[in-house]
Image 1 (cartoon, rainbow, N blue to C red):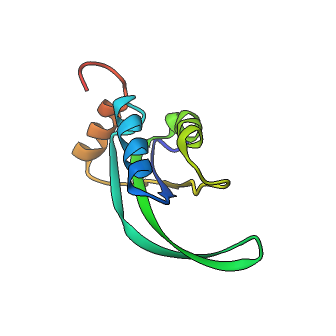
Image 2: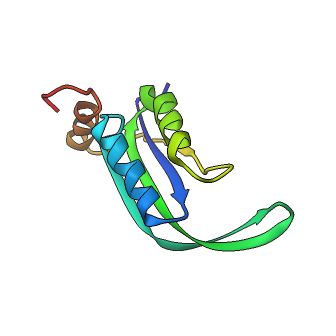
Length: 110
């Protein structure tokens, strides 16, 4: 399992994006959540080309939390098929990656 990962999901409104971000950081499942948007997404859904306004949530975390993060997102996400893309972080600043590790331990020391 990759030690550090970045997860991306999208939502149809800023409030849902904020709820996902705050919940996952508060539960120490992610160290950082960034919300970007609105962005315009174009995709095929049920045989038709669609476009909609979305918010992108980018999450930095450790690989061991992936299952819990997916479960948490699925509980609050209104989409039938929410985006959940996981990309390994293969390098970065030692200080930042140590911070990510500390923030996702779930202790008062974080």
